[in-house]
Image 1 (cartoon, rainbow, N blue to C red):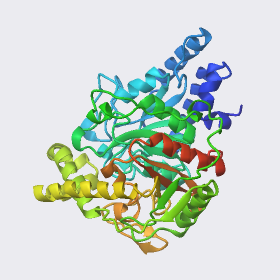
Image 2 (image 1 turned 90 degrees about the vertical axis):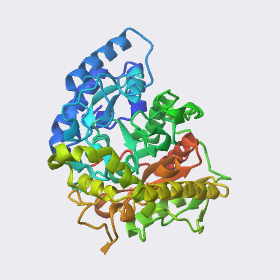
Image 3 (image 1 turned 180 degrees about the vertical axis):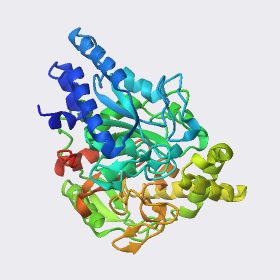
Image 4 (image 1 turned 45 degrees about the horizontal axis):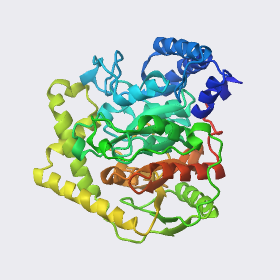
Length: 482
C-alpha cells in the first residue's frame, strides 16, 4: 500500500485491516505523523501535536492485536480532537490566550468514548477563539488553510479538524456545531459532517444545557466512517439532560463494514427542497451541483418538491441570542485579555452588550416559532434538502467586520446572511442535519448538500447520504498536497 493510499484509508477499512493483522497500528500512526510534520506548516491545522502519546498508544494497540485481545471498533485508528474538548494532561486552550496555560485533569466524555473504542488521538486542532465564528483563524495560532486551496478558509469553527481529515492526517475528526461549526468546514473541505439531534451525543461543553443549541459531531471522508464514529459517540450520560431521554442511535449495518450494501432505492420517501433561507442568492456552481445531487437521489426513487411555505428564518432574532450569549460568556475576559483577543470576537461582544433582556427573550420565543415551522414541514416531508453553503470556501483573510460575502460578483451580506444561512436554523430547532459533498465548483473547490431530518432520525440521514455517495462517489478525490 502506497503512503497516499494509507493516508486516505477510511476508518472502517483501517480498523478492519488492523483487526485482521493486515495493518500495523505502529506503521499507520508513524505514516500519519510524518504527513502531519510535512503538512502542518502549510495548513496550520493543529495547535498541539501529541506525537509521543500517539506512538505509545500505537505500540499498545499493536500488542493488543498480537495478543488476540478484544478490540474496540476504532482500534488503532487515528482521530483529531478540536481544541474545545478537555483532554487530560494535554493543553486545551479554546483557541484563546485566556486559557493558554489550561491543562485539564480529565478527558471530555466523548474523548473517553473514542479512547475506549481504541482510537488514537493525534493532537488538538485549531478553532477560532471559543469557536465564535465560521472561519478558523485567530491571534493565538494564525490562520488555518483549506487543503484544496491555501488562499481559502477551511470554514469554522471546526476548521483544524476539517483541514486535517481532508488532507489525510487521520480519517476522523471530533468537532462541535453551535451555528454550523461541523457542517461549514465539512462542506468547505469536501467532507461528511453531521450535527446530531440534540442529546443523541452528550455535550459536556454546554454552559446552559437546557437552552443549548450546540452539539458535538463527526467530520469524516466517508458516510460509513461518520456512522461508525456516531456509534461510538452516542448514548446517554448524566452530564447532558437532553441525552437522558434520547433513543439509542441504531448504527446502519454499513458502519461496521463499509460494504456499500446500503439499500437499493428511496421509493416512497418525500423530500422538500429549500432553495433559499435567510440568504438572497446562491452561486451558480452550488445551484448546479445541488440540482445534480438531488437528481441522483430522485433517480433512486426520492420524490422531491420545492418548499413554498413562507418561513421566518429569524436571522435578526438569532443574532440577538448568539451575540447576547457571547457577551455574557466572554465579555468578562475583555478587561484582562482584550488586547490578545480576536477583533471579531471583541466586535461580537460589543454587539452583544447592546442586546436587552427583552430582545434576548424575544429571540428565544422566535426560536420556538422556527422549530414549529420546521415541524409543520415534516408533516408533509420525510426529509428536507438544501445547499450547505451558498458558495465555495471564501478567502482565508475574509474579515467578519469589514467584508461582505461575494456571490458571483454580488455583495451578499455578512457570513450568516450570505454564506452560512442554511446551517444555523437547525441548531436552533435541534433537528439532525448532515452535509455531504455535492460536487466541485469554482476553482476545483468542494460544494455540499445538506440533508435535514426529523428529530432522532440521524441514522436515516446517514443511510440517505450513503446512497448519494454510492451513486456519486467523492472519497477517492484528494486535494493537492505538494
